[in-house]
Length: 125
Image (cartoon, rainbow, N blue to C red):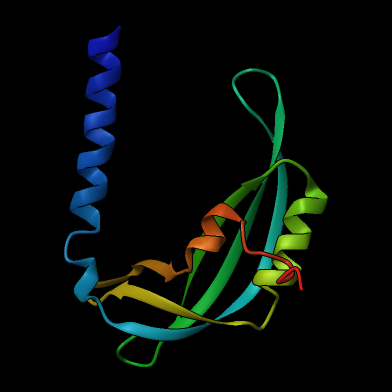
């Protein structure tokens, strides 16, 4: 069982590295958050979480409008919508890295707070 699990992890990691190889040299475009979809999901243990999917648009090298998505999981719908309103509201400008050979392969350039949600809400003064 451990061998199978290790093999699956290695395959997923290898595919990710292959798809995003050279991504640090990909072009950058100014994009815009266009929509938010929050969906309730169940985990393997029977609990639930809320998956927020942000859709963004950006121009490729030829000026064609492309789109991509970014997701983040939350413990409640309210937490997902609070994060979206505070950090990624509709119309917000974002930085998009995209593969020049296949602009469908793209990713947002986000600060670490977007992944950890630990930005301070005040300076405590």
